[in-house]
Length: 396
Ligand code: 0T9
Image (cartoon, rainbow, N blue to C red; front, top):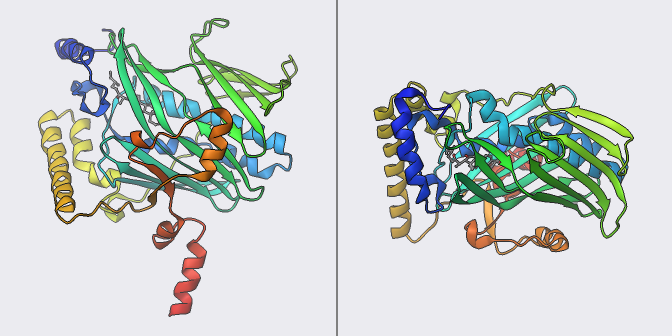
């Protein structure tokens, strides 16, 4: 166990024993302190737009084929943030805080060319854990919306995680939709106490304009031998011809090539392409449901390595939540999600999903969730914000 601090050696081997009898509920794993992160899973939604310029780039191009390529490039650029940023920051993958129902993570990015991009992330289910998010750049009419949960199993020393849920990108100006399938992953390095994520198999992005991007992940690539390897292609739906191919490492360098060919059009370096920091409100002006405010005592205790206080403060939140659920049950109502609403089905998702054989799995995510613009407007977010403001002016 190279990653395990000497004092934690026995607790790590204890932990390894408990995960062999793991029941699939990641949140129920009691991990030793050194592997606990003070970051809640609601924060992970921000990984989608840490390069705001790449996020809005598709909207700025008048060619549908180029837009599809921009979307693919942006998606690939998010992978390093999504799946390896904890390793870089904290030395290994760590177990995130399990968000409570209704937990929020709100913020925005200000970027010199992309303008303002807003982030809304909300825990829409606690059992099973499901996080929903909307990321909106009003200036360029770009909106990403999605929700996700995880199905996990333990086998031969690794945790296999299948992501349930999906992401959808909308380009307002072109009225184009992109359905993004979330990749499966597994956790390597567990026995060494230095867990890290590797992506599995493949995932697809399909657009309403008829383009399909397929990304194949190969881990320690059998061609290059390097970790985090992938190859991707962009094709027109139903056609064989490869319009663009991209290969390399999602944590390193990848190249965009014309057709299947050798003609390199562009090279992207995930290591040197800097992220834009997310701005979030100071703790004392945050809503009590906002993640960093709600978890502040737990986070401070984790960072101080004080496990007694961590436990005490965690229990406070858990008990409070239990009380809320009890009360709701007695009154025959459900917790009102602030920004999202459960729907019978999402037609747009269904039409795109059918084309690539993706199935909605509402039973695994406590329903199908959509970003509710009317709700959001009340809180001063989203497209209807201006309309809501105008109405308020008229009413006065
Ligand atoms: C959505 C992402 C997801 C969340 C994380 C599996 C995992 C929780 C879910 C899928 C984001 O968009 C992308 C990235 C990383 C995923 C996490 C990696 C991970 O290890 C955790 C699970 C819950 C654990 O913490 C297992 C404990 C492990 C660190 C110690 C053995």
